[in-house]
Length: 229
Image (tube, rainbow, N blue to C red; front, side, top):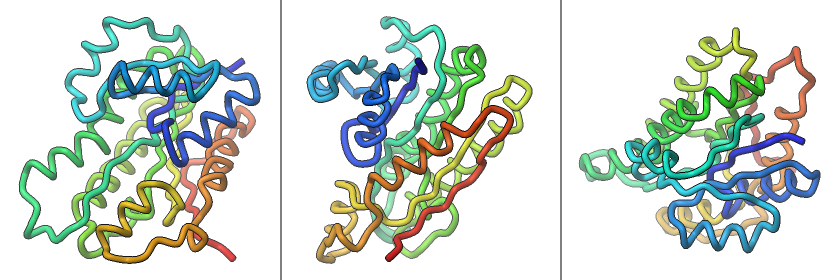
């Protein structure tokens, strides 16, 4: 039975991945921003464990985990959480940049650092659910795209550094996916949201699980997923 640590497990892609892993009998540990949210997740996902740590404050994660019991071995660390704010670079000050980079880049880096001993023990797998914005930047997506480009660099460097420890690293680049975040993006764009036009969250979950289930001795490094007919 494998052990998985998941960020962003409360909705969208993360929730679908968590449900699938629980259904097959794996141990799932969901990261929650506070104790209240941890209680909600434990009630929603029967059998799941929770850890409390706020991705908006990555510098406090080590302290937070020092007061909790972490799993001894981690087969996968799944970075699925993220934040997005759209707008022209000329309108964005340091506060928004720092908030975006903290949640989307610095927190995944710090979480990975903190769980590396357990990942090495299990010869585990780190999956970064990135974005198409991690490969190209469009107008008004500057802060988000910068954080996701950085996430790609983090994954690529980590893959090379941890290969000798048997730790696999995969980046998944979804196009627009039918999630609550996509609803928010449409509101910011002033557009009507039609979930049927975009990738189902279940499809991205299947992509993540496919990477996880690849037999030892092979590694999927990068997967791009686009809306299809």
